[in-house]
Image (tube, rainbow, N blue to C red; front, side):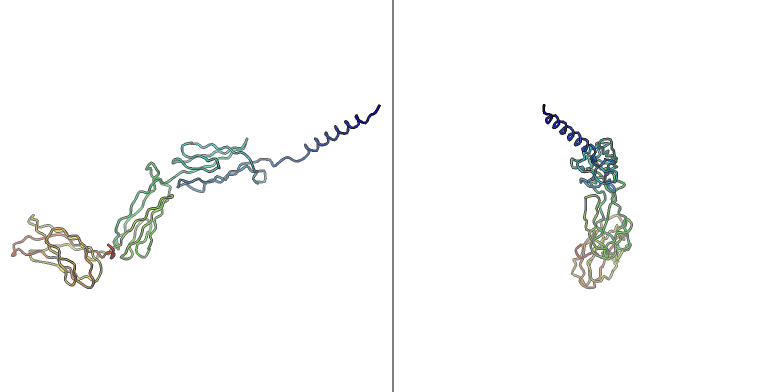
Length: 292
């Protein structure tokens, strides 16, 4: 009776057992030890997707590929996590993103401050030596103020108009663009810088007048008077050395004149044979940018 088949089965069984034992003796893959994620460095102020870059790490801190991650956001109405693992703000507030992989867990705090608008518009004009406070604020889409979102205010020409500690400071007659930025919103506004050359009170008797000499330039003139007898009588305005048109008698004047060379501005209380009323008021003259 032959024993070869039995021997063969015995050898095969032995080889199989050895192979199985050899397989269990091989080292398994790296052991998952923690979850690593990159929290946004500050408030999220724009409607963008910010990568969390979450991954499972081994005991040496090296990423383990192809590991499934789950995300839960609380509160759920402040933010969401996309399929690609990016966080996107859907509201305003602080949210906790809990990342899990099996028994491992990692929390990431997200500050959602998406800017919906900027409240605050710079003035159309700033006068030299008269600084203007300007501190715009950021608001969310519902109009709530975002106190912890900085608003950056810059000038296109610091030699004309500077931004210094929340104030607009005129440096020279001209025009500059004031840019206001918060989140992904940018607003540009042209601001003129003027110089107030004359600011005087008027008190003119019947037939009296005042003159002011002005060099070449563009001037904005504002005059307001009141007749002491309560009538509608006013003052006239004329120029010497300029082709700017004369202004008829009125109690209020507001106009712009371009003086090409030295000229004289004259304000008169037209005479009524010495019995006209006294006119009291003011005159303001500004040198403005030529485009104004």
